[in-house]
Length: 509
Image (cartoon, rainbow, N blue to C red; front, side, top):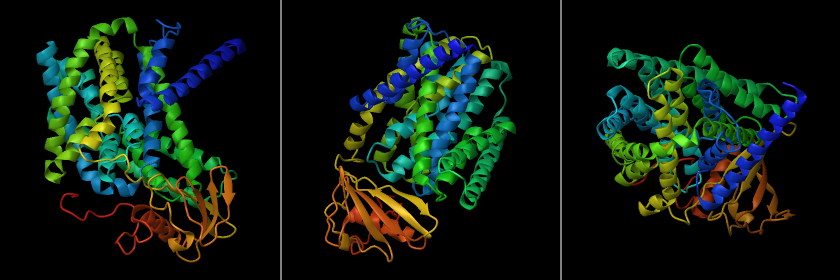
């Protein structure tokens, strides 16, 4: 590549990146999932638009899988273990048995409604059966939902890629008469999940221990090292034919909950890397499709999508969550929140690479299905949550507490933003009753800063800076969470600020 070609490539790439960021801002303001506009940027920049030619399905598959790894590492790093630890069993059932039910029902619909042969119908069902981690993380975390609902859908989306990929590879690399029996499939699934999960947890723990005990020469290296350990877990699992996707997510989950130094910087870097991976992934997939072939895929995509949304997903959720006694309102929302995104489109490249007859039509159907049903599901999730009584416009939002180490003083600096609706609003400093020797040292309010005294009253949107010690830091965070939920009388009302309070009524269980 010559220097002029390099400059042109960087100019095009930078312009597409900035256009995608602007699209994300526009999508947020109108309530649309960003992935749709990222896909649109790719389509506009493609051969039928600005003339960029990209039709390498094998390269798209490789780059797409790598982007999914980054997205899942970021998802793990930003997921609270307390939100998902009691949900591993239902999430695991949804990610395995739920995928199997969804594949079977969707394949039956494609066979009977579209006249597809069973082999291609099963392949299509497997491709669209996985909920998308990027779409779920981006949409659900902006909604004021119960932690167990958000945690369950997020955990499912982090776990179900591995079983789906296994099924897609089986259907893409075998003919209808050579499909393996259930025993080899289950054996392969167990191997990939167990070995991938084990490697993810081990590498995550190794990374956490290393980052806690090794002083790096620059603060910016901590986020790089943290994400790097997640990528190593992904690659190590893939090298032994295990699930790199599971390894990436679990390593991120371990690292993100290990109370590492510079958590705020690490989280910000991971979110930026996740956004970059999403933008690159969706723009690339938009470039891959041929817009002139999409109109013929609209009707098949509508029929398959309706079967998936109205039959396959609800049936799989109902059957899988029946033993866990989850209220029907939450089951209904979980059914509607099974968002599809980049994962099905990436998986649709697998049969193209393997030379499966009809694979091009499957890619077009999947692309149109993702676009149409993301337009339906994404913007309606807030209304569905309110209609089911799971969220309110005035619902409290949990405060986020970040830690930066003050090594010389053997102290921690906590930064807290008082969110709108938090009951920290209106509380005086002396009413916080923070554990000794924690001190509230500074309040940033709008464009001004003030040093508080005991009678200073906190306001929504205030940024608080507190100095504490490692011994009482957890107690300080719990106290701040408790007041944020129940106000200055939190302790008298039985609220102690645990990350996830235990259910107190049969309905909450």
